[in-house]
Image (cartoon, rainbow, N blue to C red; front, side, top):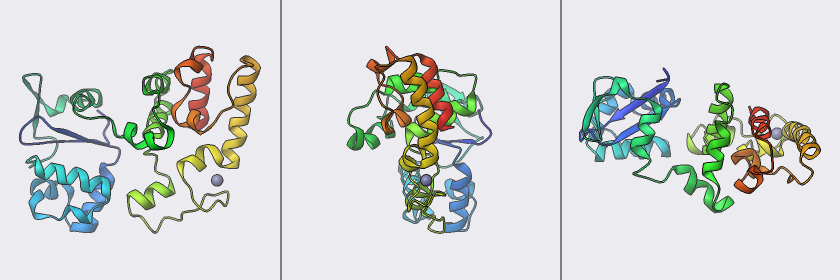
Length: 237
Ligand SMILES: [Zn+2]
């Protein structure tokens, strides 16, 4: 389990929340809005007003209270498939195996209005196409979930109004779409990838935002060599 991960387990032993790489933010917001450390806040959720927190943490904290949450890692256990397991044994993969049957992943509903039905199985396969390069895999995973900490995300989801909204290129708002597709620097890198792609597969599509965020769809993947999925991931990283 990565050192930056944190698991929250509810009293009924069934519901597991995972805050990965953002638990430092959670602690920061608890200190900022409540004046208490996150472990103190989680131990007594009814005492605190979750509406004060940014939307993501507000939702997690509200559910934490509704489900009877009363503590935090590491002095807890969780229940799966009829057996109780120490939370020390939890991994990210195991936490997802608990969560996925219970709910549609947030990214699926988040991107549907913008891109329609996507090809998530193909996306996850391409994210892990070269698993030896962990930083590239992790970053592509974050981007496909729409949780990369760009200026727009920090300002809108984390209420960090002090973060300058503009991109280093001068564009007025640094969104993920701008940063990884529209920005002149991104365009120059993607043009290089496109030139190699067209040279290898003349019928290949022009790279668009969908490719950058989610990789090639299933039909495209049948004619485009896997190395281009990795090259695209590497370009984003
Ligand atoms: Zn830019």
